[in-house]
Image 1 (cartoon, rainbow, N blue to C red):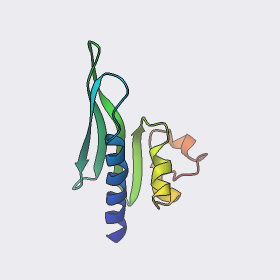
Image 2: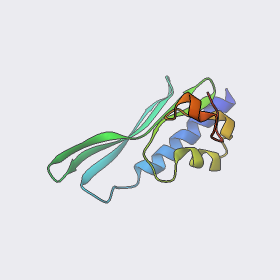
Image 3: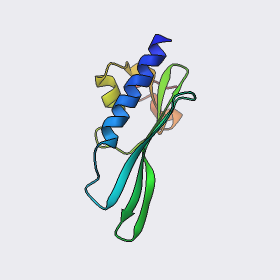
Image 4: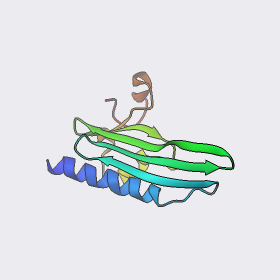
Length: 111
């Protein structure tokens, strides 16, 4: 349970840092959505750019089976890299946005 608590804390910390960064364009707000009971974590962009509605995920991560599954990563740095810097082992991070076949060629977990 300590490992799961640590992973929850680190994921939330990394996502909160991204939510603090204001986009350089438009009137866009970043919100964090944390469902700790079901282990779903997201950063969402909402707002307007000129006359166009903006809504979408910047980051979506889940914790499943004691591994962090990155479902979507719209950052330049890469959330997986930030998680590794925060002490999460690569074998506990799944790049779920990559096909299962391609995951075997990364340094991260296959599933």
